[in-house]
Image (cartoon, rainbow, N blue to C red; front, side, top):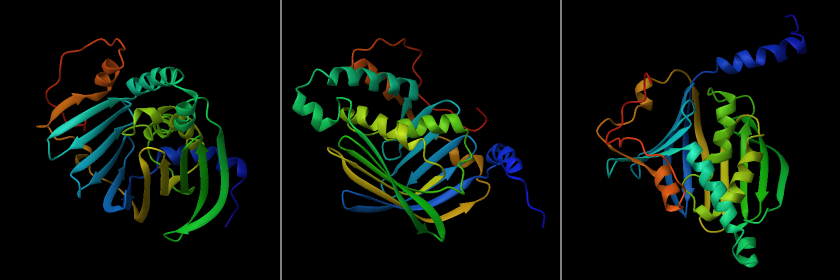
Length: 260
């Protein structure tokens, strides 16, 4: 067998990334002492987390830069545009600077120190994963990534997702340090097979992958229910912060994601 020159490998890597197959992860998530099973689905455009135990799913659209919180019990979908989230985080960061110094320090709002520690490696599902610990003020993220598995979504939106996704669903006071943590997280190579986040208010969550499979996922797996109500939580958040936003015609129903 002939050896492929390193230069050739470097040239081939971007193409391999573009052709990366769909990925399905079966996971166990532990939050506030409660254990639940979830399924994480990746395609070239979407990532979806299905949590059948609590009837709540999450859908991330990397093309549009939008996250969806899907509540099957209430038949409600909450939409969060990443642009709105970034604006809100910036506004909150400025306002938190006016809080008393002790509160700022507790929340990590005043330019928190950043620490990134290489913790070596560990074996998960017979795969060698690289371990990292990221500490930003009171927030801690520990992640074990398999560098041989590349998410099939575009690289730049994926890095933006890593920067923002720890902020989504967390108390707004954590926005500042979590954005900084996300910036460091975006530098980590490969897909996380184990993940732990510790926050001073929200507590800690640990997610462990129990099975990984690469192969085609039907487009229907990423469709939103067509009969659920839509709520633009990003615009609501900006309104609550007193930020002016232009209002479009309200959308009462969500169209399926496939074919957009």
